[in-house]
Length: 431
Image (cartoon, rainbow, N blue to C red; front, top):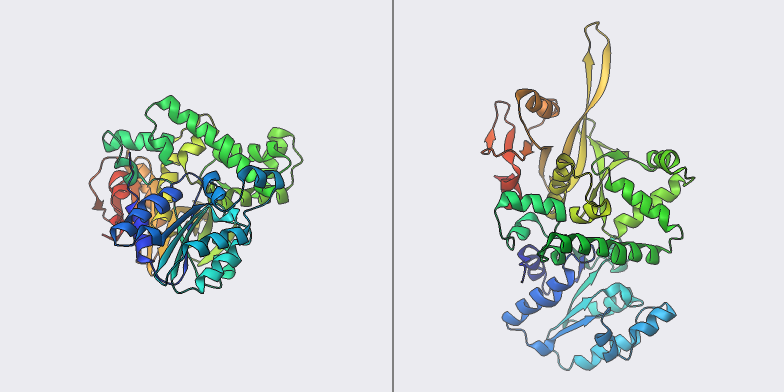
């Protein structure tokens, strides 16, 4: 079954022939290769590009490596990447005229000196280059410098809820429950049985993500790294920092792990796109607060598999789903705080910080969003809107709830919507 990824396909089509290296990044198994080598490849053919002017090469394919005289097993034994001279000679043999050639290169980080190779192709007027990579440390964080400002990143996420629903056989209510449980990794979504989904997620974690992180970063104490991942899995959406996590290790594990090591491990998780961090932002003071941060998983199925599908708190998982959706739509997402001072009955002033779940920015647009699993009564609604009423600007303020409500503005101008409408309509916030 094919899953349409029109959101990302459109991004690639718009970037065609723009003189930049198009870099598709994202967590492993989110669909980068399928987007490039299937969806975009067929789009090129349908637009009239001849097949012999589209060069596809996967650096993790034994068959493709054989074409250039490389051996995947030998490379693994020698702990090296693909020889760039062999690859470039192969490309030269394929480019036989002055027509435009489209290079679709999968898992580019496995090519030694890939930055220099790609930069050399930028100088050729008849080459349009597209690459995928699963490693932020090698790719997305260095695009601007390594490609001298000529790298153009398209960051890809696992399936959004709307993409998930395009292949789900059921209504949106059951669909969201399954999506929040098993996530949006395409190969998991396409499994039919619950047991198969769970096993696939467990195998992905053990055989792909953990192994990839430990191998790439030469982690020696794998147990500590996995313990940290378990702690983060159990506390998605909670404020934390390396020092607080160190104390948790000391108390629960009797471990002497340092804050510096924890910070390093957190960076490894982010570099692999397994988790993302949201920084706190003082809305009144208009300043960022470095620590603590909140951490969210790029795929909830992976998070749930990590803790053996325990601790499935709906409030936290819903918050994670909303965070991922906002990031996928291109928003810069922070955790907002609103400092206030209140007097008690004795006149004593108490300083507090109210929290806004998400402060979302895209260009000149800004939205303040609260994730409220349910609004059962007036007391809960008052609690959720309280931070909004302390913000004195005119940006749109929104509560997203799982309750089945019609979108409406309350008496304070706060927009209350249900999560299904929000997730299924990518333009919903702009209405």
